[in-house]
Picture 1: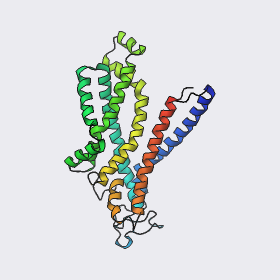
Picture 2: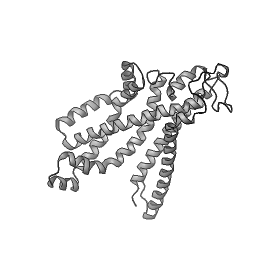
Picture 3: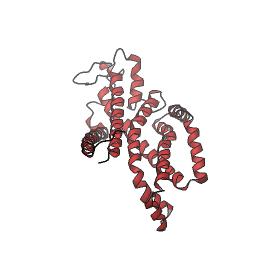
Length: 280
């Protein structure tokens, strides 16, 4: 890691703060668009226009139409609501569960830690996406089953990180003082340890949004996630790939939405991490 002078560190932190603020504004704008999608779509995303099948982008259909004559832009906007909202809900649930498990394992250790860590080792022995496909396939597809499949292994990241941070934090003086003060283990974990390790966990959660979004779109692309005709980016790509040479816009629009959204949240997480590492 590069060592900066106090003045250089201050300049870099100011730059990172500005970049972080700009990225947060873009992310909030994206979330608002996805939340307001039903009210801002230019056309009905589920209306089949037989006279406009695979039409090129135009004033009426800015992103063209798909193989059933549906407005691609409208479906991308509605797909943002499905993809982003499902991803954020899933990241929040796995973040809370994984952090709680990691806190317990790191603070108490013992048999609980051994059993959970062995379970994590077993889950890590299988690639996450392969395991998610298997779980989603057994569940029969659908948005809820796709979320369960991805969440089945996603909590591991937070559990391992929270455990390592907790083991380090419980050796600090403020934790020892809390113990001498007669505070319970639950209070020490939630009031004293968690606020001090939350920064790195939140940064990791932000980065995981992009990974989870791609995984969710991947399951839908394979037909074991969100089912058609519901608008979702992965299922839209799957529907349109058969005629990609005739109407590439029907694939490029949802594909670009997935890539750009994933890059945005990855960049946001990286910026937040760099901001926390800079010492002034």
